[in-house]
Image (cartoon, rainbow, N blue to C red; front, top):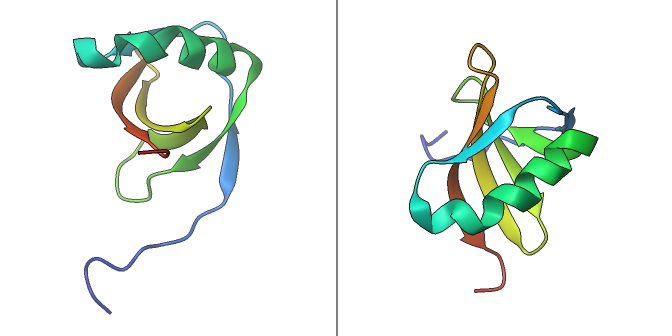
Length: 85
């Protein structure tokens, strides 16, 4: 087995209605409002099995990589990739 082998995991329901959403980079700021809206009502997410409290979320045509920091009640938007590129 190689170190790059992907591990398949099941989607979970991520709902954080009272959390702030913060972009880690100003280039990601345009996605914050949409992500915050989806997190208020709940959205499917895939847990990163190698990093605690990190998730991949599909938002419209983009995949977002986020970190949920419970103590700070904040979701950090770490990266966005365009699936249509």
